[in-house]
Amino acid sequence: MKNLNEIKLILEESSGFSFLDIKIINNSLVCYSESQNLVENIIQLKKHPKLKFRQLIDILAVDFPSKEKRFEVIYLLLSHENNLRITIKLQLEDKKSIQTLTGVFPSANWLEREVFDMHGINFAKHPDLRRILTDYDFEGFPLR
Image (cartoon, rainbow, N blue to C red):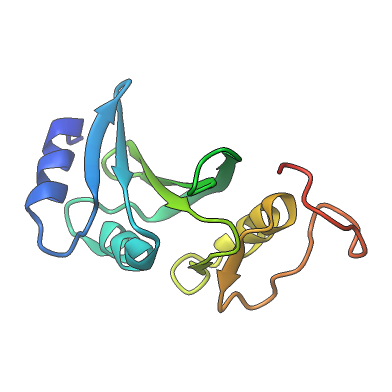
């Protein structure tokens, strides 16, 4: 198992990553990304021979109505080989979309639908972006 400092160093020194910041917070690795770099960063995390973050655990969002970039979208990944988790966070303005991860992780399909249904965050090029937790005729977004 690699330790968090080793992983952080790999992320900082590898040319394939374009994170805004990388921190170790409460014994967890947290990376901050811009939305336009998200998919490429996650592909690199998945394919990097030393990192191997090959499982998407969850996608969630937090609403901060008073901020200009209202939403924080959070991705949790797992590396079984290194027994480590990583958190990728990005800030997003209201009515902006994020590129879907369904081409990288098929399991992102339902997770993105949940975030869409609860917060109204759109995922560009998602194959079936429709409500999943509320009724199809429901108006609004419960977690806003």
